[in-house]
Image (cartoon, rainbow, N blue to C red; front, side):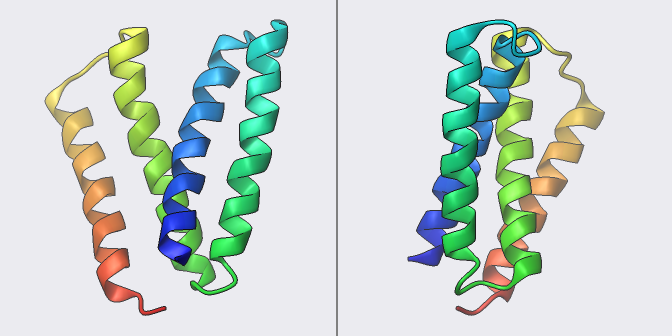
Length: 106
């Protein structure tokens, strides 16, 4: 169950990072509220996952999910550049997250 909490913590990290971009430096109310709410949810789920999973695994997987999600949404929503080197970097992050999953026992 810890992995499920960690997965959603990572997804919520993506939500709050996109909302933070949309808040324009916390100058827009609704995206600012979404940022804070999903940030709190993300941290809460991460802390629950850390009760069972090792710190290094939990934090790295959480950051990895957030980084890959933010990369994908940056390209699709915000027109950020997509080039082979950036794709390879994202795939390496993904591979690291998958390897940590397989290397970690609850």
